[in-house]
Length: 322
Image 1: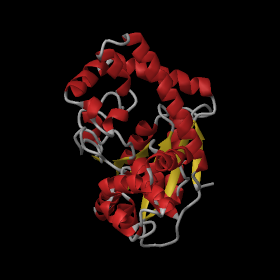
Image 2: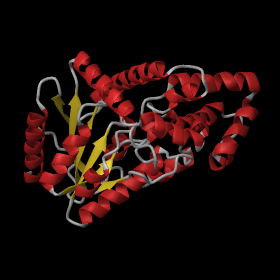
Image 3: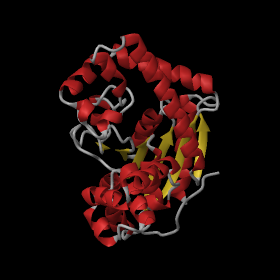
């Protein structure tokens, strides 16, 4: 049974396709976009970077020509792209798509970004990061409150002006927000003044109950990426300074090559590490998406891609009929 979120008729109706890596989100979003007359907004935090194509499983030029895509290739690798910027740009894209009479379809696997976008929740309302918080308190104990407040002033001057150096709890919280999101507490507060949620959405979640099937798909996808020229793609970006970047350097499928280019490991180890890191990422995705509410789950182990499309199309038709 489809669960519809929000009852404000002024909200923008959107379809969201989320799920674990290698589950078939992009293919499903493309088929739904063609069937519904929609346009796709990428919900992948790394597809925004130009040049990071193979390793992020970016839609092909042909796919992007047949269905308009948004939030792809909009930043250089040296740019820090935070969740706050993503929300702003995704909202702008959704407004534009809807205004032109098309259906916005948000598709991707970056759970935090999509959750905050759809729900309107602030980052401060999300689960705390206990490890990061503990490290900040430990740093305050070693270096003193003034030193930690000085660090806050470097990254978020407005918050530093508003928080007394001795109010260690608020200093730590402001730094926790910045370090976990790339966005300052000040910016988060600005975002919170926007409408809580501008979307009325239906959420389709592609999950994989058969772990071995999912892992086999992940391993096969990594092999395909490697045979399609991933090493050359990463080397070009590495030579352009990828390893020194703040955000892009964290991408799975890219960071694993750095020791290889430094002569510290071999290509087989690189491939195995990418597969392992991708499998671990899929576990984290499942944990995150399982917590999200108001979703319709479709198990890739239980349904064929065609059945998943048919069920998703039916859900969308029911959603728009209501």
